[in-house]
Image (tube, rainbow, N blue to C red; front, side, top):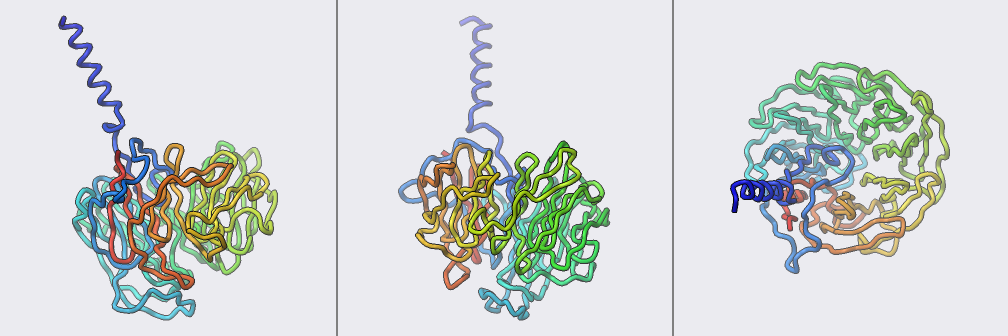
Length: 441
């Protein structure tokens, strides 16, 4: 073989190896809903079905109670929990007090070994007091965590050292929401945007490395639970804020208002992040409090197209809906999965198959993540499900039980925590352990 031909073959081998799915760089999951905050897993070369014996569990690490999902980046897994000797697996609508310790654990992504733990005492006076709700945010060498009672920390990713911290309820003189702080913080450049609550401080942007307040925006007597979301509408970056009394869009650079519309929530239950389709914005809350908004062509005004449609659209409780083209897929408060037409709000189909039910089940929960032409879904039964969703309906491919249900809700055993998907693995937690599930081919 000539030297030129040998070099061509060698280059072809290297080129094919670099582009082979097995050699593609792994994806991180550094925050709630993934890298782009859209519940899309962009890795490839994953298993088509589960092995007969179930997927391999790479490691198990003990943790305590919590609803917060893991964040995965830079070969680290960060997860929060609540350690207490009291029985916190209760609904607790009376705001009884529980004492314990919130903890932030940093794990080795490959082995699950605990590299460091940051902890602090905190009393809970919230409903469903099992533990924190918010997924950590990892960025470079920092990690941000928000506890159920408003304890906000910026920590060094590699050693857990406190860089800065805030106590939102004390610093801003507000009361913790009934179901705890659940609006996952959003990192935008050098700004960490948090839902705080109160007069003029519904949303507050802190400097990411110093904790200094940069701006504050809007007012709310109740914070709600909807995480902030930045989208592009009419060519303008807009920070969408969905709270019990309004839907608003502000400038993420300075908090100045672009537009707002009144909204009337039931029991303060604004939970989902808004869904955007072109110039349309959809929001939905408990008890059919749904609304489709049309934003003007200049992006500075908005009007309601329709609202509060009975037995239409979707009223999410625990699960963020996901939009694909002109269809929204999401769980209603009745625990059934629906396919919804974006423009009309019409329910195209519904299914209870994911939760093995043919009837409504209060706050039935399964977390939806899209990957190529299918979905990885983690349900409250502790099962990982592979399925396809379309305007034609729900098509299940396979499912496997991977973790136990350690909490209770509405008289049934549940596990309500959003997994992370990265490195061709799923990272899943309950109130006793965090596990790593191998999903590579």
